[in-house]
Length: 347
Ligand code: FNR
Image (tube, rainbow, N blue to C red; front, side, top):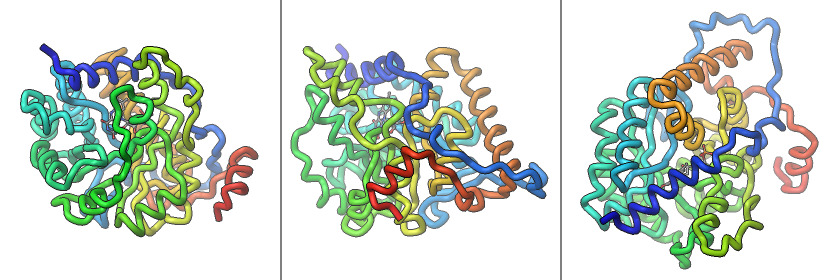
């Protein structure tokens, strides 16, 4: 018999796919990069590598497969394929939340398959806030992970019929950030972050990497609402800050913390814009899942290779030899975003 938790994992995948759209919602189309006609560069000089945690995590590409799944036979197969795709394309891969594995050893294989199929790449484990340091240590060990993502997902839990209702997370989150055996990324799940949250994560929790995971891609308000009998929370569909708005919220903290962007990234231009807005790395979940489910393994490898070539193309046109030069490009914001910056008093 499939457990309630495993069933939920399958549902999240099928509903993320059902509601997947590659239309522009994360606000990347409100941001422009400036073209230069004399970039004085050879495209072979472009090196797109990036690092997190002061070089502790090295990534050959500044984008990676973001946290999705594990916990059932079906999602174990997806993790196996995603890890093989990551290995073939030199990407890092984050696992979906492994909290189910703390309760059910039968699910272990669905997470361990990631390291098995990605022996030399970075693997990020994932767990929900509210878990203890001991739990965090267990999932790091189970996945043989290089880093741990701890997701903070209040909106998802509140709309999820069986979700948590107690959000006194900070003390244990701080304990995990300070004492976990691997570096920790604190991560949203598609509702974005504001300046206050980012400041608290840095100054009180002690986080040195934050994934602002904004609105505009996979939408857990929609997904969890669909799982409710009366589907009464449809008015929360647009809850949260978009990925671009969240990156604007993070401006004041550039240099103090590694910023990771995710949420609604649809192509290499979005990746370049996210980096231009300060991201050190960019996570992609829904678009990779959609390609894998719709078009299969080989097409997903091909899409990622095209994205890698696309990113080199954009960096060449901008005259950027590396990610840090891309981070210092001048970006233009449209009037709505200028208004956002103004009202939010972002400097
Ligand atoms: C997710 N996401 C997610 N995040 C997390 O921290 N732990 C998790 O277990 C999951 N589970 C999960 C399942 C599925 C099927 C999807 C598509 C996504 C959220 C994900 O990592 C990311 O933050 C958001 O999906 C936004 O990125 P995209 O999907 O718009 O690229």
